[in-house]
Length: 565
Ligand code: OOB
Image (cartoon, rainbow, N blue to C red):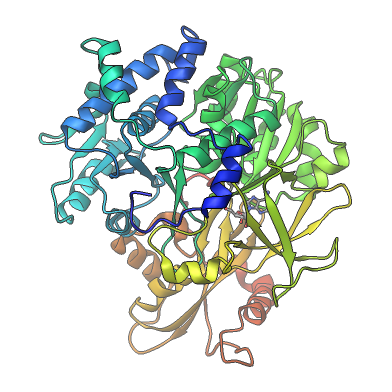
């Protein structure tokens, strides 16, 4: 692969995946034109009042691709993308695919702390942002990040207020000149299908999130096979409410899986029930995907008869544990079939199948999509556990890369010597042949599907004045599943409070969803026999304490909408 720091699949596996037809050897930009040829004048995308046809999408993506080339971008370059759900996101994504530029998909709540790190890690050649979003000035921050790079980095802006010197992305999507000639010119620049098509962010447990290089071959299989399993067809109207930067709404089967079969993808700016329900009613949406926290809010509003939800056939739920009660009530409440999805940006995808018995739909997280997915459930020593017993899930397969990007040391821990990815999830096989997620080994907080690294939070809190040491914990939350709590041993100086921690995180430019929502001052941490912080005991103590003291805790600042998978 062209980009240094990617870990390829072994040659014999690549041959096997190709021979089996999983990898088809064509870059995603090429597929875009196949979709355009097959579905021609059909509508591909709806974004508010804007409707974009399949051919129009391809022609616009090509126009943008050529303009990116004229800005100096080309095969092997990376582009930091931080955009909300909008048609320009999809067009930019596809434009990149035409010329071998890999988008690095940042989340909207990311701020300076995360963006600067991603820009550096991926040595990005450009940055794409909205002018503003939810009152935050992304354009100014992007310019600042661009200024930290050793070479000039163009800032591409979607919005009405494009500053001088920045590139107006909407203008760059305008169609001019001969589309067929341009298509021919761009075909000459087509990247190899084994190269990186996009970078997804991992839920990361060590420090800042790792990034995952997904190839054209592997990602095309990811969304095509997902589409087959989930029954996506040209009649599908898919609603994307989770942020497109996430694997789930992007390619599981998501927007790309919809486009691959000639369906209609509706892009919603928010998962808020009123916004989403209005889209479902207006476009007669048939399938959508949500995290449990969003499902919970939808169910609360499902009785609101203002909106006609009768078109909904399937709601996919994944990203974090789906409580049993919600699993029981969701299908009847929304009048559709529930599909559980246990997936990860690292690859492996499990789905319950729409025609599974209701017990399987409710009680399991589904089974892998590919006969080439390999799964091991192992104990602490790495030995397979007896069938049906709980252990850590290890996996390899045609859409599970063999290492994180530019992270050789981390890869030694996260992957076994023979290429198995250690998910850090505790699972067991259900007698039906489906997986049940029982817990996890990894140190993170799953805040409504948004993953927060314990390590990263602790490092930040240790730098707050007056903090001698800090231990972060996943604390239960009725709506989000979990939220970030922090235990602090005070040191010299001012006594740390939740407010000082919040102010410090904000000043450092850390995404709001990572900011601790509960703070406990303690004198010492319980230790394990080897001298590490014993988080389990600490958590038990805090929970016992919390029963009496939680109401007295300062209320956490409202953060972004419950976050996605
Ligand atoms: C999805 O992807 P990521 O990368 O944000 O997070 C992956 C992790 C998994 O390793 C697991 O710990 C957790 O999220 N998870 C679930 C789950 N689905 C994911 N835990 C319990 N039940 C589930 N159903 O979250 C993701 C990617 C593609 C599709 C769907 C979700």
